[in-house]
Image 1 (cartoon, rainbow, N blue to C red):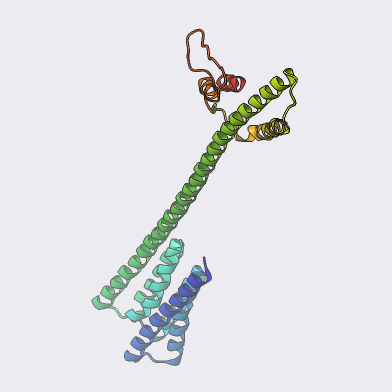
Image 2 (tube, rainbow, N blue to C red; image 1 turned 60 degrees about the horizontal axis):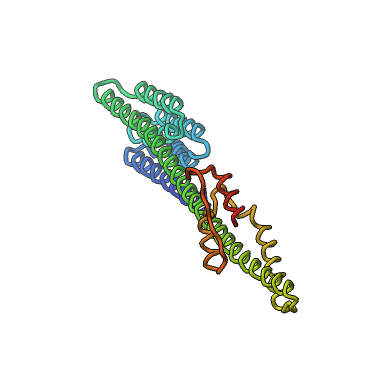
Length: 283
C-alpha cells in the first residue's frame, strides 16, 4: 500500500470517529446527559474507532466498554449505540464476527436491563438489535467485497504480466527467426563467392597464370566470414530447416554454376533433424 493511500485512509478513519463522537455528544447534551464523566466516556469510545484498522478487537472492546459505562451511569439512550454500532461494523469487516456479535449482545443486554419497563423500551431495544445486525452483516459483506476487489486486481495484474511476457517472447522469437534467416542467406551467398573465387584461383594456377592479389583476398575474406558465421550457427539455428535443397540448387544456378538436383524414390516429409542435415549437406 502506498503512503498516500495509507494517509487518506487514516484521515477518513479519524474523520468518521470525530463525526460519530460529535453526533453522540450533541445528542447527549440535548437530552440533558451532559455530565463530565458521560461526555468523557462518549468521546473516548468514539475516538477509539479511528484505530480500527490496526486493532479492531481492541477498538470494539474499548468502545463498547465506554458507551456501556455511559448507559449504566446516565441511563439508556439510542444515540449512545451509534459508536458501538460503528465499532461492531469495523470488527465484522476485519473478520472478527464472533467478537462483534458478543459486543452487540452485551451492549443490548445492558441497555435492556438499565432501561425502564414498558413496551416503548422494548421496541427501542429491538430497533437497536436491528441496527447491530445490519452492522455485522454489512461489515461481513464489505469484507467479502474487499476480498473480491483484491482478487480481481491480482488477476488483472497477472494477466497484464502474462501479456507482457508473451509479447516479449514473441518479439524474441521473431528476432531469432530473422537472424537465422539472415544467417543462412549470408552463409549461402558467401559460400558461392568463396566457391567461385576458389575455382578462379585453381584455374589460374592450372594455366600457369599469376593469381591476382584481389582474388586471393576475396578467397581469404570469404573463408573467414564463413568461419565466423558458422560460429553463430548453434545460437541461431532451431529445429526447423532454413530452406530446402532445391532452393540452394536454384541459387547456385542463378550464380552461373552448373548444378542439378536429383530426387529418387517417393518424396515425403522428413523429420526435422534429417531435413536439416540434408539441407546443410547440399549447402
